[in-house]
Length: 120
Image (cartoon, rainbow, N blue to C red; front, side, top):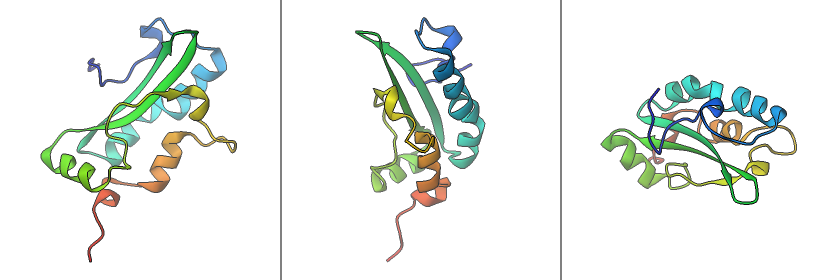
């Protein structure tokens, strides 16, 4: 598995203090959808990460690292598409209806084509 600061983190590989329910939801709703994310955004590398911060707070980051110059240009046109690492409290990952941030992202940007600026 590719390992860098911008790689997917398998929870069993890290010393992450996470309850079983949250771990299973993370794996089902986020981690196991890596291939789907690659297919939707082929010129980006999906980066799904979870970390413990002081006071045992759990944080996550979901972003897509541009792999090509074209992808870099797309991110300039769509600064609201997550392309840099930003950690948020785990409580923000799912909404009241149970949708994950990744679900909401895929609704807003179904494919890489949806990142293109609208033609005037």
